[in-house]
Length: 108
Image (tube, rainbow, N blue to C red; front, side, top):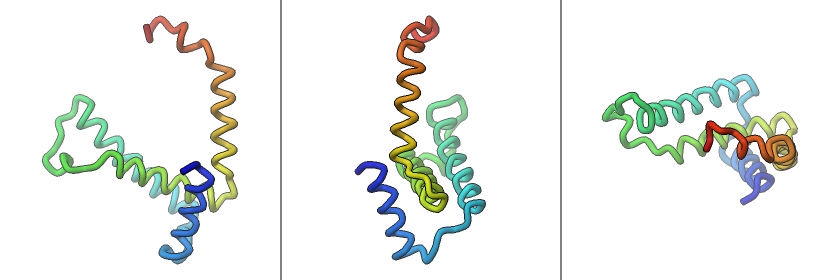
């Protein structure tokens, strides 16, 4: 599924099941919460913090999908075509950084 299709799928879901979009500020707060859940899993599973028993069954993929869902909601409700924005950003990063990381001694 490309990003255009994902945006449409989220919009269809909201219209069918969600009644309406939460306002942008609520969705921004929700995005922050979801990113925090991802950070908690990463910090405890891959970082130096110990993982609590209550965190061991958390699904990182599910939490990342939650982040994606809210990002797609924000894009939809603010009129951003995320496919175009992503393609443009990838092009900019490719031109700007095409040799930067290859030449970074810290990454060798």
